[in-house]
Image 1 (cartoon, rainbow, N blue to C red):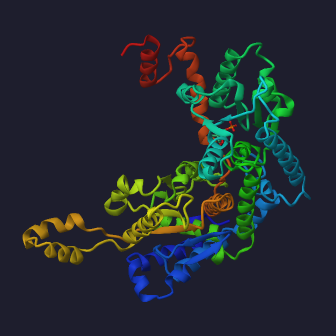
Image 2: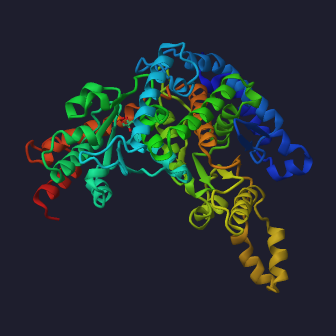
Image 3: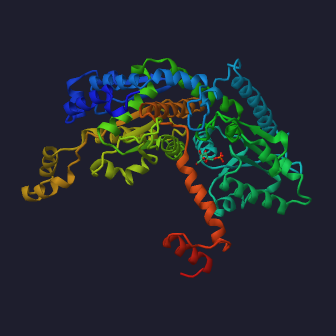
Length: 542
Ligand code: F6P
């Protein structure tokens, strides 16, 4: 395969960029009545309006050419068919099999079917009070302990689907900071609390430390301890033997497999806390929505393929228009954890600097993903989006209907979302501002002084993703949309989106520092900063 940035497809885009560098999107709307319909599409219950990007029809054609030249069609099939496309870890990437629940013709399908049955049986028992704590009382609270992919997905979905909550309340503990678990269990009743220990490897420091703390808390509250672990702990892991060693009963372990990457695991038994929070039927709906997006992604031609389009727009913004970040701004309070979830999905997947062939890439890969819910974000960082020195593309996400239709709230929310997207595109120019200031009877001199501060240059690209309502099915489709977007970008950038070697370095170094902080190992060989900070910790003087 050609190196990406010397390929014909890339060079064509670079030449095209020279032609359209000064294109103003708002002018494109004036010259084409069809721009909105030309650059929008519907799939799996989602509507994407990408007409406010700095693109023309030719841009999209050339971007499609880039996708075609990348071998995306073959890679996509390879992923769905279970080829070992995670080459550095020699693993299949088959999270799509987790939501293809009608198909049990493959070995993976059979495993998934069995697992879902096990999950359903357990969830029904908990909800029906048939699974109970050591003293016979029904479970009222679940504490899901995990981190990274074993936390962010379930936590985000449980928050997003709060309107569907059952009588079992689900809490999440991830941070190694003991405050997280302490504050979570403080008011819980050990008799009615179930812990879900979620860890693919069952070796992750944070999760094990919190799991041990949970076990100690429970045992400290319960007369004749040990057997209570069987009533109050379940494990979700690809390493059942380690969960058994921890004390979890064999029947209380929900396995998943090497072919499910951590950050793609909410669809597996890692999602059992979702099912406990909102019921098994809603979990099936979530899987169903994602599967609908999978089918769309697998079959739609590139120019009508939502994940492909979203991915290519990202590449255009990053590699040709120079963006380094992507803001994700959901106008839905229930989606407040979506930016954090997408940070891991995009940045752990595509924050890579070496291509599959082992050479350094010579172009930018994943953007820094960040964001917060609108309208709060408007009163915090939109100033930079409007007038800062960096161009920050935005994905706005908004439902057409609110779960809480009171007063004019939703209409106002919708108006604000559209207004931000419109303002980013149109900006506000000198003439308009002068007119406005003069209308306010400002002197020419004063107006001349102020005008430059008020100019908003505009031409900032944004997408709007519209859903009818944040429901299990649409949420499933939305998450799968971003998963496939990330996959497409990884293919085009010629990187492996499914490993995370960089994360390992920090873990390894932390484990080396532990004996030094315990005073059991000498500090020679350390840099003076790390040594000095260890000295302060061990002597408790600064
Ligand atoms: O953050 C790094 C990471 O390896 C993620 O990829 C993974 O989701 C997370 O740690 C948790 O790992 P585990 O599920 O094995 O505890």
